[in-house]
Image (cartoon, rainbow, N blue to C red; front, side):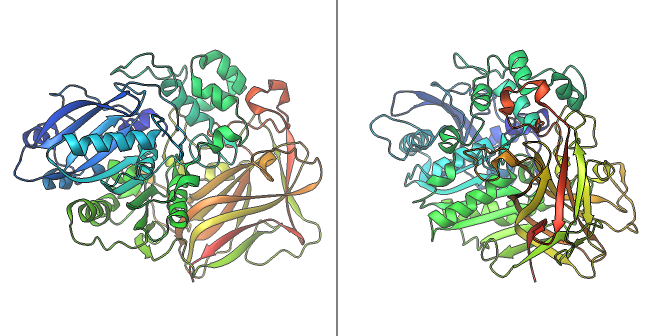
Length: 619
């Protein structure tokens, strides 16, 4: 979802899979571009452009993408560089009607835009939401685009993934297949804006600054992005101090930023925007796609699949998770990520064997795609794995306990009194990356954590060298027993794959990767402890008393190879990815700089209060 210079491919067709071998000239030979203003039930008209095959000897299904990120370039003679899902030549040569639409209130569409507009299952008369806008658009298309065969597929990555999910809830009978990809799902619990109530500062500030400004009338032009006064975002945000300072100095004309600041807890505002609760009654085939190393919507893809499975049982519902960054399946070959290289082009595999057959089956009557219920790529094993259910029922639940000697073991500690502690200083927060940057990297999701391991405010536990492969899959639960001297605290838990020192260095993209001893981040998550009992009603931490802080970490699919080690790191700052917790129980969005205090955080590792991570292991 986040508009970032690193992710401009969300709004322009730049960066393709290896399948892409075409340009706008090639497309222009095969397709005519037509522009429409399609009326909605309340009279508002939405800008829509369609690429229709010149070959009129047959009819074609529609592949629809609804977006808040612009249909540019505008004009009937202005052709995109690439069209269709995955930006793949396969779709272009096969022949589809490719349609893209500016959603209500964005760019050239009329109306008022609302971020993550709530779904209204009880609409009457001319009431609208994104599902009804999709219904009206599709209904108009199949009646007015004479080349259409009556079948429609909908897809989208990130925010457009949210609109794809809503397309399934339009229940239009022509919509036969929908693919939400890295879909925005819940902006308080797990995607983009917050994780477990902790505010994701870097992404949200950058996105809201350009995306959150008012748009008084239709336009073809993007607002200007934030001009960083220095190359180091860590230093910038630290100097600016509080969120309230940022609001007053930079965000005066940014509606959604103010809504975020004024809804600090999981109230009705956020609950109305949780699309999971409505994922019932779906009839069309669903293909939910995500990246295991997606810095923005990793949580959303898993949640969308699981809730559809629970609330719309019996439909064709599939989950795909690859070794990708945000949208990496359509914007890279997928043969490496960060410093880690794979033995194949995973994006090509996905398009050729999963996505393209899925749409061919449901939109063109092609052969059964014969997809597994869940297909995930295991980076540790460097191979695809398939399952008939996710998470698989045969996985064994295990607990890995933290011991006072820095060991991470499958046996519970026997110590009567034992703890590890660190001093957490919001004035000197742990950086989320080793880079000096004002562009939030996507590679931090898999980055070498040795830079953090060296800090005194990061605690580390490590297993002995593994004697056998350990395949970890599904959801992880962090079950921490803590004792803090303040009244609030964040806890970041990181799961890390430690490579043997004997691994030989290699060169990747001209860079030497020092892989010996590499501490590869596999998964990490933050918990704002005042929400440990309720996201709706925060509660102060009791000073100097042992308290349980238990939370979920998004699903994982990873094999820790024989000879490697499993590491857990715990820290209380992750800056500026996550805003600084003042460690004082207060409204962080309006707090003062004097509220920030240095506090001692203890992780308890003793009988009766044994901190651990609960994992699923494939036996």
